[in-house]
Image (spheres, rainbow, N blue to C red):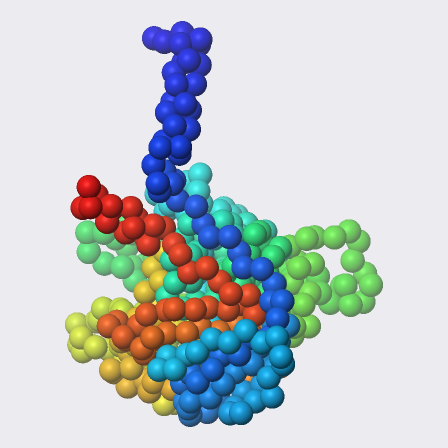
Length: 440
C-alpha cells in the first residue's frame, strides 16, 4: 500500500499535469459552460424575419426589443437612434420554447447518485421547493438551449406527494437568477391501477389490487389530513405548525394547481374526482391513455402534458402510431396540450418529437402552441411568455429553417429577457476539438 506522503506526491503530480494541459493545448481539457449574457443595454431590432407569433399567422415583420421586453411588432417601426440591428431575412423567429416537466439541472449523470438531486424518500413532501436544487451550471443545459428552449419547468420525483415545480429560464449564474415562477404546481404520483402478470410480477393479482387500494386510501388520507389542517388554520385553531400541510394552504385556497402524474384512464378519472372535491385546477402529466377520455378532459377543462410523443403501442390491438396520434386527438377534442419528454438530457429532442407528431394529426400551429403559449398557460405565465406580443418578455429564438424539422432546424440566435445567449455547448466543443485531430 502507498504511504500518505506518497499519495500526496502523486496527487501533486496529477494536478501539475492537468495544469500543464491547460497551458499547452488550444482547447480546454474540461468543458466550460458559456458565460450568461449581460442585460440588454440598447434597443434591438430583429429585421425582416418570418415571425411566428403563436397568436396569428406567420408573416415577415420586424420586432423591436427594449429593456428586455417586446416593444413593437410590425413593419416600418419607429426605431430609436442607438438600436442594434439583426438582419434576419429568410430566417424564422419564434417565441423561446418552453419544455414542461423535466428534471433539467437536477440530474447531471443518471447513473451517479452524487450528481442527482431530483427526489426525496418520504411519501409526503408538499413543502419541497425544487428550485433550490437547480444547478444552473449543468453541462446539459447549453445543449437544450441550442435546440431552441429558453425555459424549463422542473419538478421533484420519487414520492406520492412529491413537491412543487418551478419554471426556470436557462441562462443564469445560479438558481436565483434562473427562477421565473416558483410553486407552479403541486405534483402527485397517482397509485398504479394496472395489474402485472407474467414472470416479472412479484405478487398475485389479488395482492396487487390490495396494495393499490391501500395506496389510494393513503393518498386520500393525506389530503383529508391536509384539508383538516386548512380548516383549522382558517378558524385560528391550529396549535403549532406542520410544514407539510401548511405548504398546502394555497392548494385548498385554489391558488396552487394540481399536477397528477398518471397514464391509465382509471387513474385520471380518480384524479379528476379529487380535483373536483377540492375545486383545484388539474393538469395530467404523462397521459399515455388520455386520448381515450379526451371528451371528459375537455368538458372538465383539464390540460394534459403528454410525455409519449415518441411512444410505442401499449396494447396488442393498438396501431403502431397510436402514441403519435394522441396529441392531435386530444387537441381535436378541445383539450389544452403541451408536449414533454420526461427526463433531463433527452429534452433536447423534444422539438423534433413535436415535429414528428405533426405527421400524425397535430397541426403545425398547434405544435407551436404546445411548446409556447399553451405551455405558458399551463405553467401560469402566459402574461409573460409564450408568444411574440407587445409587453411580453423578449425571449425569442431564430432558426434558419423550420424549427420542428430535423433537416431544416438550425438555431442561430436566442434572446432571454433581451439578453443575447451564447449557444455554444459541450457537444460543439467536442466537435471542434476532434476536427483538429484530422488536421494534424
